[in-house]
Length: 280
Image (tube, rainbow, N blue to C red; front, side):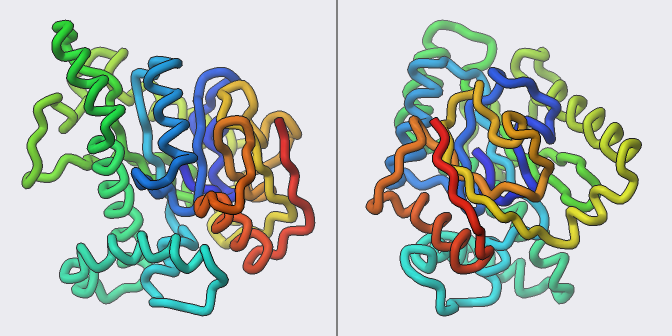
């Protein structure tokens, strides 16, 4: 579950091949149980595909998270409504965030906190809770799906792991840390793949991440299927920063889908994309 930002193609940043990651992307990797598009994707991923891991990945310099720090603006609906969910994260952690004077450090911390809150939202969903309980009843060493939080640093290319289980919450399925678990249940292989990819990218283009961190200007919005075999950047040979992406089950477009409509509003009104591609 990642951001629609053109600089964060999920397969590339972890060196994954087509067929390895079932993907949902929206503005600022927000998880809401009222988002039928995302909930349908999670249900399919958990009940049909039996995924063992759900990763929520944020990224530095996230425009959606930045907007929640700057207060309400004249964004067209439903984008303004979508951003209100991010402002709720800010209000929930206002005391900590307001104590941070440096604006870049404040944004970085809110990106982390947003990942933490969205991981909790994944954990609370009925579909995940039911699967965890079923697996625990079967005596599995660790119930799946395992839930992981990550933040992608645009300036370095590296992923960092975010521990989303806070001291105030119960953790009956031992989600707190995964370094000591077997490879099947931890995130270490994914993080190692990311390091290899980032190092290779820097060797190939030394200024790649410097340019990526300075901004993006995609000319295209891609509305594609969440299917793991159809990574948008790979199939058209696009680099990070070139395609603003929304992915859901069967590339469905509905004007009642606030997630997609918010993304389209941002793509058209803010990024001024010249092309919108719907790809099945």
